[in-house]
Every structure is written in C-alpha cells, then in structure tokens.
Length: 247
Image 1 (cartoon, rainbow, N blue to C red):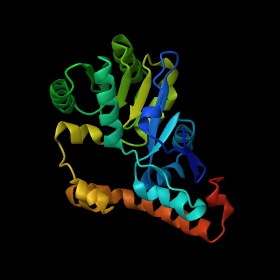
Image 2 (image 1 turned 90 degrees about the horizontal axis):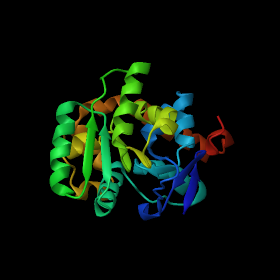
Image 3 (image 1 turned 90 degrees about the vertical axis):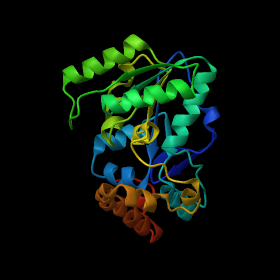
Image 4 (image 1 turned 120 degrees about the horizontal axis):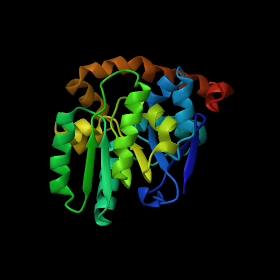
C-alpha cells in the first residue's frame, strides 16, 4: 500500500480495494482535512486518534498541499462519500452487513430505506445515539451493545468531528465489527437532507465553496482551516516543527 507522510500524519494514498477487511481484528478508517488538522492542534486525544488510525485517507483535498509543496508528493483523494459508496458496494457484493451509527432516527430511517433499494444484498442495522457533546458511560455502553448484537462487517459512524473519531478510537477494541469508517456528514447527503454538489465543482476544486453556500454554518470551521494554512506557510519558510508535525 502506498502511504505518504504529511505534517506528521501517515496518509493512505492508494486504491480502497487494498484496504483489508479482516475477520481477526477491527480496523478503523478516518479522514484528514485542513479542518481536522486544525482541530488536532488543539485536541491531543483527537490528534492521537488520527495518528493511530489504521487507515487515514485524504478528505479535504487541500490538505495534500502539505505533501505536494514540502515533499513533491501527491496524495490520492478518498473523500467521505467515496469511502461510503466503496464499502457499501463491496459489502453488498459479499451479501454482508453494515451498521449506521449516528444522526437522528429520521435520517437513519431515510438511509436504511434508500440503502435497501440501492444495495439489495445488504443487511442493515441502525442506531441513533443521544444528541450531546459528550456521551456518558451508559450512552456508550448502549451504543456498543447495539453494534455488537448486530455484528456488522462495516460500521459507519456519522457524528460530528472530532467526536466520532475519538469515540471510535476509544472503543475500537470493544466493537464486534471488521471495519469502522468515520464518515461524518455523508449520512445527511445520503439521506437527502443536504444537496449533492455536482462533480463539476469538485473537479474545479470549488466543492468547498458551493458547500459553504448551502451550509453557512461551515464558516465556523474557517479558523481551524486557517491554522493549517498558517502552519504550511511556516513550514515552507523552514520551520521544522510544523514541517514534520512534531509539536
């Protein structure tokens, strides 16, 4: 598998067909973007979760500027929706099981209905956890019980970043699943709660702009994104601490 080190993170840069789904142990897939990088500079547990994920894939395409400008290496794009559709199709061909954890009951029911039509060979489980900033021990216990009673091949977690990544990292060894994918906002896209951005805009690298128009609340992420570009600028001017992610 091709891996590229960028800002101290080892990022998967290959076909998702090379991601192993093993019966012996649970793997975790997370995504990296300028926004998640910025959050990680202020949240040590989140940073640890990203660094220790089994597969860290490129979601926000601008994050690869760190490897292109500093190392002359590109990173293959594997964004959240691509991750979701790849494994849904892959497990469907195997007549397997997937589980959706996160979002509201209404959103999950929409997803389940759509997935049943799109992927007729899949068995689908869902659970909507309480909507709160921090889960209690009882909340987490219930979530684990719901997943483990179903024993999915792939567990998709659709909560906000960095909550979903930290929860997956802390509970990985307790979950009876082969692969955990933290896919965030994909749940709302697949359920039809949000408009799908035309491929044209992604090709122009302007998907983020259209998405911000559709969801102005994304503007709150910009300070975290600014941290990424500031650190990139410092690294380009020779600051080794940021170049190698050693802070």
